[in-house]
Each structure stands twice: as structure tokens, then as C-alpha cells.
Image (cartoon, rainbow, N blue to C red; front, side, top):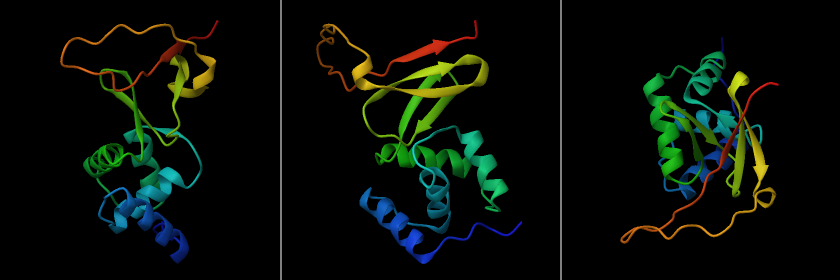
Length: 142
């Protein structure tokens, strides 16, 4: 299969996105960024991205996929949604929101921030601050 080919405008836009986040631009990062951000907001695991990269002709190791996702997350380009130990999704939607998790499909569905009303939060222990709240509501089939 021929490797993924991007127009010069798409490459320039993705390069700027990476540079603006403080990341060095490489061919692999640009191609992975295209897979991540080219189709709107989505939830993706490292395994899904690795499969998409392989199907698009991009030769990349699983370690590179994990490293890239973590670097993009650290740079603020992705949110990480931790489902349980060993299962994380990366979310391209950077707006504040929560999620449904459909257990049988291993799939996340966005919940608008305004759809959940929270009461008073407990005061964090001394020396700590609340960085954010992430609600994941688990769903199963009836």
C-alpha cells in the first residue's frame, strides 16, 4: 500500500498546530496528527491509531504511537480519558465535557458539560488543588 499522502496546505496546517503546541514537526508526527485530527472530534486508543496508521501505509512502531499520543496529550492537543487500569482513550475534543462508556462496544460518547449538574465539591487536602473533573458513566445493554 502506498503511504498516506497529504497536500502541502494540510501539511502546513498540521505543522503549525504542532509548532504552536511546542512540538517539533516530523513526518511521522504530521501523518499521525492527520489521522487524529483530520476527521473531526473522536476518541481513539493507541491500538486503533496503530491500526489506522498501518492501513494507511505509515510504517510506525507501537512505541512511537504511544509516545506520540502522550506527547500530544502533554502538549494540550488531546485529552486522556482513563476508563480503567490499562485502558485509556485520547479525545480530540478539547472542550470541557464528560463521557458515556458503552462497555459492550468499548466506545465513548460525549456528554455536554451542561448536562451534568454537580453540587459542592469537597475541599482538596492541604497542599493539593483540583485540576479537573472527568465523569465517565458506564453503560451496558438492557
